[in-house]
Amino acid sequence: MTGEQYKELRKWIQQKQPVKIKTIKGEATFLPVKLYKDVKKLFVYNRNMQLINIALDDVVSIQPTRIYGSFDKREQLIHTR
Image (tube, rainbow, N blue to C red; front, side):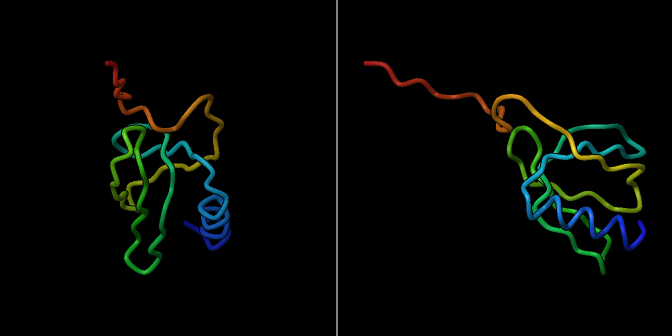
């Protein structure tokens, strides 16, 4: 990643902007949380709100994306009496 790409990614983290990350293993939408440039790791939440880390060496591309509805796709518990 270049210095400009790091700046963009930090801006998206501050704005809580969901991003589509394409890695050598596949592509998915994440909510970036923290970037550690020195160890080349990006911590993100997936759609099930699980915190995971992605090695920046495996990243092919990162693009901001729009999502419709809630980012959190965990099952909602409905309480009835």
